[in-house]
Image (cartoon, rainbow, N blue to C red; front, side, top):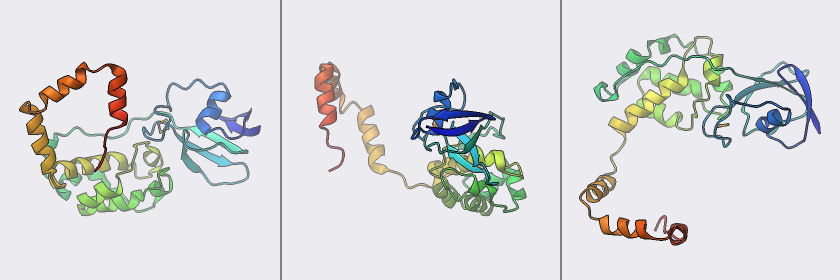
Length: 221
Ligand code: FES
């Protein structure tokens, strides 16, 4: 067993549990702050420090093993700036980013966002790309963001890097990314009914046979 502190109360929990499971072992019934349990949804952003160490650490509770001496807190839900926009009316330019999120000009480069990212993304650098209008860089550097919001909670300029990056990825995906022509052709073929007979055959298969075919499918040549 190890000893951890959760919201000011000490608990003994088995060694080797994730922080999320340690919360549950200690009796917390989580309704917020938990989602996929697999590191994808960003719901479980957690802050902790160790007794005797002044530094704050940031983690996804479902992906981080609890350690003896951890003093843990949770991040409550708080509303973040997210303006509405119609993507089809926007241009893939830096002016668009600044038009939707003018506050990004107030970033003063403290790098707190990068330090608080549990995905270890260089958040400050992709915010700098946004400021320069570098939509491709913004989209690429933020690709692994899971929108946990820890950087939003910590930013002293009250910026919202995940939402800025999301707009960047949407602009890039809609206007700048190379088009997958073969996909376009295949969608047209499907719409024209070219594979209708094959699809119907699959639909008529017994479930066990369908599973066998799925498991033995060729994913890539
Ligand atoms: S619960 Fe979804 S990332 Fe942790």
